Length: 226
Image (cartoon, rainbow, N blue to C red; front, side, top):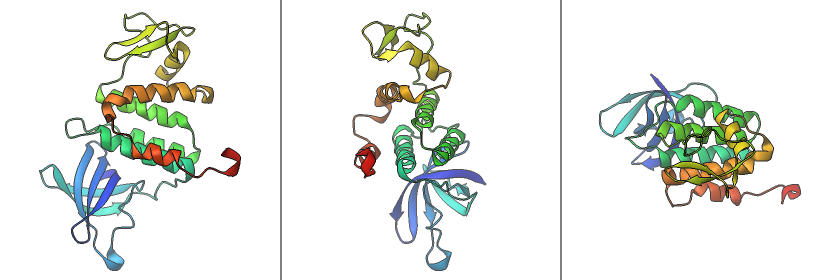
């Protein structure tokens, strides 16, 4: 049995669904699942953010999902934490393909969901984005510049695609880059970290806007946050 999460689902034929999954040890897997109908329907559990156990069969790019059951209760997400988790799912669907499936991302993804459910914070989002970049081989050094010189915490750096960071005339503080390398991030530096990961992820997700970002921007805010 495998454990995994549904990243995206859409109806397929009668009482079935086409699923994009994140599977422990396998990464991105596309599969079809027969959900059934009536009291025995599996529709209520084959949902995003519900940890699942299942078997996989077939050898084509579209596998068959069988023996589906819950591994634990669904991760309780709401508000900004839910919007953020939806973003993570869209990011993974966009970034992962058959040739770069993200075999080691299941545990970091699960841990990020749990952290978001416990208390919303941008910090676990940024750390997961860095983990994804590392998994894809797209992560630049956050401790040394493009010339191999150790970053200076007091210096500003600019990003040079396919090369790295260079000092001077930049927008990324060295202290923030060094903190991210150590997986440390203060709330005061969230804006720098968000700007950085967006720049680094752009070649991965492409030019088409992420729908989840628009959804997050259009969400209804409490009156005291409008």
